Length: 191
Image (cartoon, rainbow, N blue to C red; front, side, top):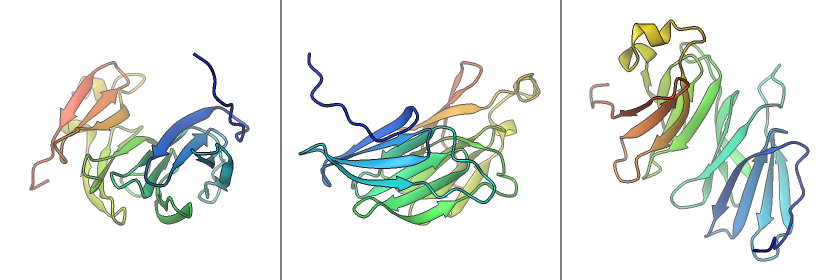
């Protein structure tokens, strides 16, 4: 094994990586709230983009990235926001900021297997499902729908730490909870 190249572009730890085969790029994201775009043929840095933070929020914490199935849109997830970027230009086209009943920090988010939905988990136990086209909220799943009262009221409280989309069922996803358990969910049509 040999290291082919070492890419330098972030000031803090790397918290996300995503390849786009169609665009021939690697996107790295870091705790510095930066996105770096690397050409996979030359490994040159093509662009560096700062995530636009909501007013009053500091650019710290993990930033995760995931390409949609067409590999032309990039899901960018930070505790303060969910954003979708046009990956060819690295321009933000949609942004959703926690608000109302979904005002807690975002712990994780993921595209569904067909890239039509975005599943998002929050540190207060809520889970949300968004349309991937425009980040419009489709459904909120309260923690009481999938966790016991004991888990909800525990100290520290249990919450979904990570979310993963089922590889073949577009409406099904799993959440990994902070207590070590995993719940597989599929919202009903009426939800």
